[in-house]
Structure formats: structure tokens, C-alpha cells
Length: 358
Image (cartoon, rainbow, N blue to C red; front, side, top):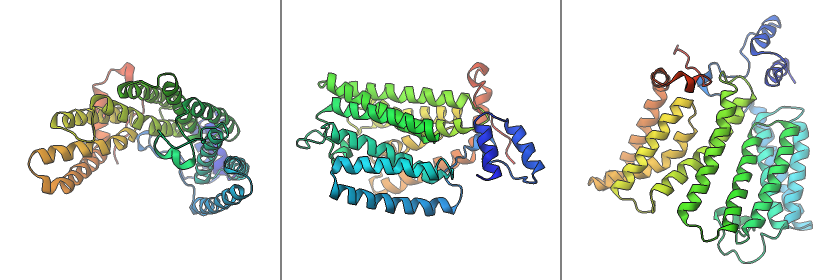
């Protein structure tokens, strides 16, 4: 690792403070800031450390794709996914543990967790039988959710192995991957033990999972209000996972039929979106806004059509959403400062502080 990477790693592991790392960099003649946010509310992340990350990621995609092809031909479908998981772990030993490359590490973790989950599901028997009652994309991989308890078992195995992956490599997205697998396990168990549960009941289960993930994300955020350590990256991925679960379950719970909205339902969706936008600004996380944009767009388009402007629905919706995002982005700091000024100090003590605009 480079000197900068060593100092960054030292800060993340609590060996030295961020201020001590900065002073060491000055002594070494390196006056650029650490690979961390310039201010807490910038929400910068370590997605890529250089073009070499992209170059390596392309190579990983080709290599792992070829491994999957040959393993599928020579072993079996479950053996193919097991082989991909093993190879992804071995590649992480070099590109993650030794080279500390951001984007390849993220890709290798995603590949590893996905391969473990799908391979375990097929091996345990969830891939047998007709594809009746399958959920979304899972049928593409040969997983039949008519056997939800087996699906839950595969998800729990994924949780255990991703926990081992995090212990070994400390990739921030791993915590979110484990929580995602745990969410699938909970939904699978709910489906297995209460197959006649109403859609509103499933929405409640998903909402509880989303709120639990959001709570965990806030614990990482509040443990690092200055957003200088690995905790802020872990929190980002958790927010990115929890936000769509919360948004989708809330809207599905409030609106019985989102395929055909009436004006009342559209207004309810817009109200939920604005409330979530307020929370997003308060905690300084944009994931909830991104997760709710599609619902807000659909609701706004419904209101436009009901107002008699059906020929302008799409451009008017895009214009409104685009203007909202741009205005919110431009006024994020002053708006957040105003919200924090009227929020009880006990609630915001460990939240990131806004920095003055330059």
C-alpha cells in the first residue's frame, strides 16, 4: 500500500486519529487531504481509486464469466456457482486484501454473495420443480420460491459466509450484503410459516426489515459524525439497501393498487415522498430520495393526467422531478442548516454538521 493508504487504514482501524494522520502527511510533504470527505455533508465515497480499478474490474468480469461457463459444462449448475464463489474469494485475497482496490473489492463481494446464495439455493433443492410462484428474477437462476424455507436456509448460509468475508477483508458493502440476505431469509420464513398472509402483512414484514436496516445504518452514522472512517461507507450501503425497502413497503401498504392510481392515492404518495425527503435532509443521506423518485414521478404523472394535460405527462413529470432534484441539490446545505436549527439538540447531537459554503 502507498503511504496515503496506510494512513487511511490507520484512521479507519482507530490506530491514529484523523488529525494525527494529516500532520504525518504534512511531515511527509503530502499536503493533499486523505481519501475522505472534504466536509461531513459531502457524502463522498470510495468507489474508485483510479482507472486501474475499472481496468481490473473488466478483467474480473471476463475471467469469472469464463470460469462460470467452463464449470457449468464440466460440473453442474450448483458446482458452477460454488466455483465462482471460491474463485471470487481467492481473487479478493489479492485485489482486496493486498491491493486495497475499491471497485474490484465491491464487485468481488457482490459476486461472492450472489454465488453463495444462488448455489446454496440450488444445492438445497430450491431449484427443483416447475417455476410456479417464483419471485421476480430468482427464477432466472433456477430458484423456485415455492420452497420458501429452503430459500431462507440459503439466505442464512449467505449471511454466515458474508460475515466471514467481512472478518477477512473488511469491505464496507459486505454488511449491507449480509443484511440483504437476512432480509430474504425473514421474508422466506414469513412466506413459509404464513403462506396465506395478506399483501399488507408482507408489506409490514418488509417495512420492519427496512426500519431495522435503517436503524443499523444510523448507528454507524452516529458513531462517525465527521464521516472520516469506514463506518460512513458501511452506513451508505445500508441506507442504500434499507431505503427502497422502507419506501416500497410504505407505499404498497398505503395504496392497495399502485398499477392504477387515483388522485387521492397520488397525493398520499407525494406526501410520503416529501416526508422521506425531510428525513433524508435531516440525516444527510440521499438514498431515500433516489428510492422514492420513481414513485413520486408516477404519482405526479397521475396528477398531471387528472388535471387534463395528458399530452404533456412525460415531459412535465421529468421537468418537475429534475427541477426538484437540482434545486434540492443546490440548496441542500442551507436547507439542512435551517432544519437542524429547529431540531432538538438531543436528536442531532451525533448527526453530521453542515459546513459553510465556499
